[in-house]
Image 1 (tube, rainbow, N blue to C red):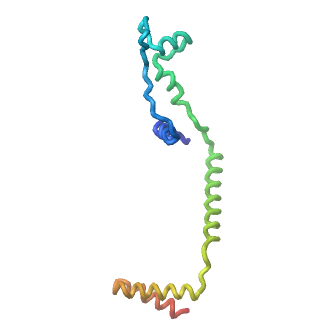
Image 2 (tube, rainbow, N blue to C red):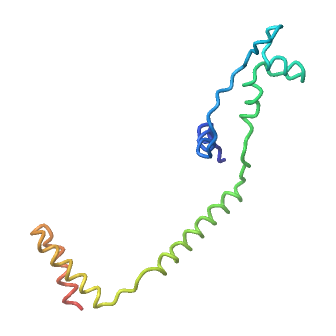
Image 3 (cartoon, rainbow, N blue to C red):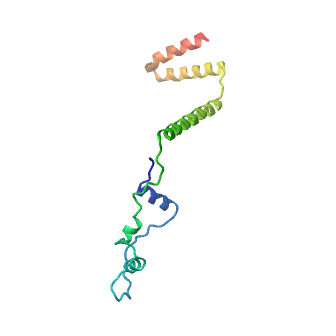
Length: 135
């Protein structure tokens, strides 16, 4: 089951340009009975929540995604594998075909490169000599 964390949700709103606002209970200056706006509001409407935070977080534990059964999970994996196969074909179709002559030239250039590096690459040079001699 895919779920979003509270921080991920906040980050999305921040990235979209929403400003961070701190919500708190406010006691108006003209409150003659000492009740906050929230207390007056909940009494007027008849809410059971004691604080505004309780009211706005009442559905925090409600799942926001569907529950997948085995068939749905298998289908999503098969679709991903199909996409991967299509990506491989797309990548392979963009690969330049190299001729034998071009490949041998690259090998000779690499051989010169490794010769300049010293004895560390003796085995590599030997294998390159075999490939060039074979062709």
